[in-house]
Image 1 (cartoon, one colour):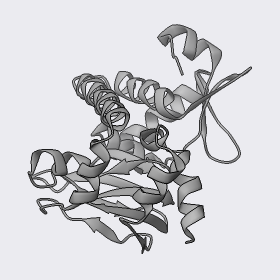
Image 2: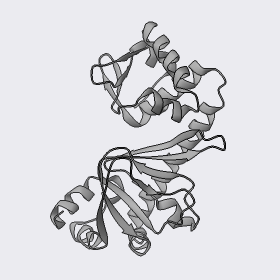
Image 3: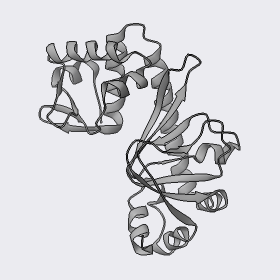
Image 4: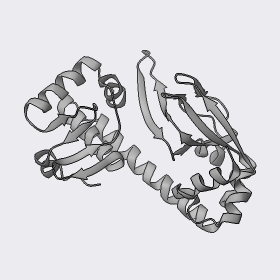
Length: 230
């Protein structure tokens, strides 16, 4: 990837949006581009991480395996997202395994390059805002997992997804992310069969619709009931 292409991409990432072209050019010199195949593990759970990863293209997910072998999806990261920064800040190991769910191209920044970025006051402020947003997402997820009712849990998950991936339309909110029932199960801590039953029920009641491209649309009735926002 050419330097100018890297600069143009970084300009569109929230974390780097305050940097000048010269500062972005300096940043690209500390970036290494690496490709990962679909299904390939990028980071292993309990690894000591020395890099921050920025997704230029593709998708990855962070998963945690419970004692009984069940996988729980902690986060899904798409093009423009980054991960790995927490362990650079606190020096602790990775609490989850990160693997590519699609072929991915990532930019890897070393710990030294990461701390150099934080020397820019606006980048440090933006990083704090992003980390606060992720903390709020974690609180919402804890709240969701505390629901014993399967339908409530799935609805809460859909509301959380609408905050991050929702696109407003005249017919409701479209979740611009393709998720299988297994993905939803791993995100909600339930079985795929349970999630399928709930999704079917929500479709029949007209609260959600599954579009041709397999993405979910939350109907206006659903949005009014749960006061969805994007």
